[in-house]
Amino acid sequence: MRISKEPEVRKREIADNAMRLFCEKGYEATSMKDIARAVNVVPGLCYNYFKSKYELYEYALTLYAEECISPINEILLGEEESPEVYYEKIVNVFIRNEGKEKYHDFFHKDGNQLFHKQLEIIMNDKLQPYLENFIARLNNKGQLMVEDPKSVSRFIVYGQSPIVNDDSLSPEEKADKVMKIIKLLLK
Image 1 (tube, rainbow, N blue to C red):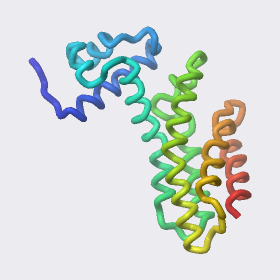
Image 2 (cartoon, rainbow, N blue to C red):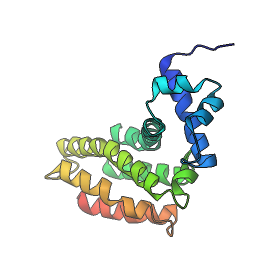
Image 3 (tube, rainbow, N blue to C red):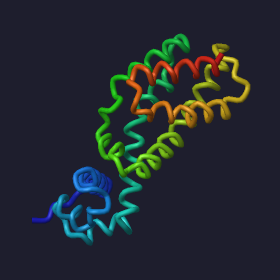
């Protein structure tokens, strides 16, 4: 029996199952037939939504990146009383979530460094405008005096990646190092 679903619901279902299979079997070993079977649809339906496995992967990757950064973005959009409150909330979210992300093991698996770099770029690209707006908003309130919010936000977002991705550091050490640098830049 065929089950009809809203296009966005079906698209998300396909993407979620694809990522699950990529985690289990690896990207290369997973076919569109495997993904269709996991969703309980014919392969042609998957191709109605995605021209290729890579296009499906890119869509799933973007969804996952948005999920990973949404808690930070929500904090940056908040109306807290001081920058210190924002910093504390960001550190708490980072420490609480570090390593517990839905597809963490896939992106941190040996051999998947390229996939991880793609995720990092998408996350940074999506996070940067939020941080830029945050800095500009706090500038307008007189809580920060950053001359060039766009450049500083880019420097922070793209510069923190090597620290955040350093598996030799604990989440607390990562957060401490990154926040010390951010506080220096946002004086």
